[in-house]
Length: 385
Image (cartoon, rainbow, N blue to C red):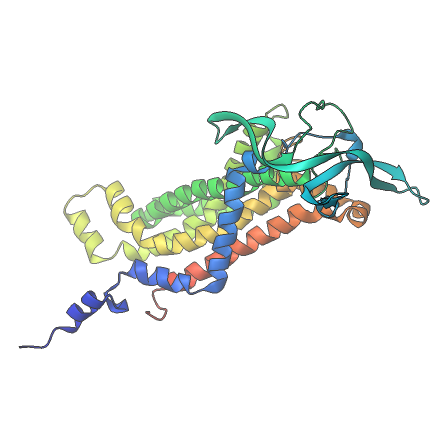
């Protein structure tokens, strides 16, 4: 009996040599610890943003006006009472001025408010579909207290802002805007960049020259100043949602030119390959050749570039919101929450206002780790494993 061919043995045993390029790339990516750390961080952040209504104890605009810059209540949670161990609870608080005329919050004696799970709170639509008032956690016993009471009890686990609004709730809601702007923006940019860059490299000649001159004109303009100029053209009376869409479009308009130039260079070499020449000779429409046969060969680069570009969109939105030209109060985004940190004195006395900046930093680093991991995993000249 003749020996079994090596390829058959590989297929039967499922050895690395029998795996597809995609599976080999996925295997290399999984072995990259930093990339997988970034992946799971982003899974957590995007998951909390999607279910922000349910996870947050309060609505992003809910406030207690007399509790501005309330310190985090993590250390204010009680687990014991006069009878011993009990269910976690907090008490209401109020401020007073110390000998240095600084505002100091202290607990007020009286009613204890248990921290409950699956409590009734502010109304919302779960996933935008089902109207409900159920929240993962919050305070019990506050249902009959008016929402207009400036000193009403609220659960400030990460402190409050200058209007007495819960920072944790606003972080969860703000993540929806700050995280989604990168995904939506990069989707628009890469559709434009790949189609325009693919057409430029495929057709060449006058078409290529006109497209590349347009790309160079856009790339010569300082990005942030162009962003400010385009943002100034948005009417001041637009809603936050309309402003959000406008910011996404503006960021996408700025970013597609550099991608188009790189895709154009890749397509120039791909369009000279035999299978593309054969498709032309067979009379296949140019649009079909570009979309079905040319552009898919640029996906390995495009996936890495898209992942590495998302942080730029997040920072762009945060920068606009930070200087008051992006998402406006009372809507929450990490950028406009970070605007409070522009006052150095506030950072000194209320350091928890820097938490949105920490989340922006973590998100940007997570995307960079994944981008580096994808680049190594998809590198055709890398070590085949």
